[in-house]
Amino acid sequence: MTTVFVALGSNLDNPRRQIERAISALAKHPQLHRVEISPLYSSQAIGPGAQPDYCNAVAQLDTDLEPEPLLDLLQAQEDQQGRVRTERWGPRTLDLDIVLYGQRSVHSARLSIPHPRLHERAFVLLPLADLTGNQLLIKGKTVSQLLEKCTDHGMVKRLEV
Image (cartoon, rainbow, N blue to C red; front, side, top):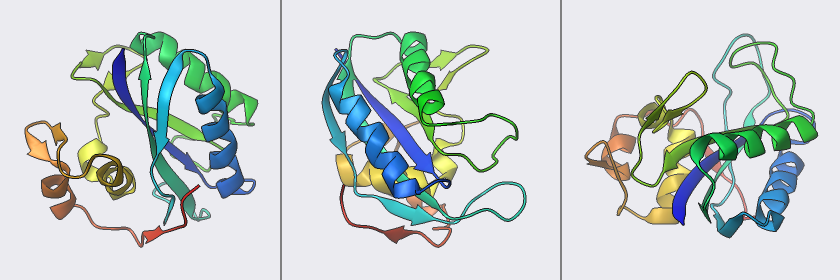
């Protein structure tokens, strides 16, 4: 089993409900175990044009799936929840990103792990810190050290799921 961290985000079609549906689907999947979820956060959208705020969280889970089959599973869940891929960083019903996969590094045409912009994204780092405290090292730095260099982008902690 490998411990994996997945970032969840939504800013369309009742974002909180989209995140709750994704969490439920992940928790029920037979190849995903010990699914734990951070509190939810609200953050301003980063991307083109005016967009609604995002609802964000991070899931910690264990799996025997290799990274690309896990990506397939996550993208199938996005599709099931109405994700349409038309504009990079555009609004979406659901975004599920593998940000860490154990200690592995993966660089393929479809997938980069650790997520290449993880260190810049408070909307991933704050919920990640909620799950791991300051124990997790990313590129030799603690989550707190990475957060020191991030702006919060107007993040607000919401109630737990």
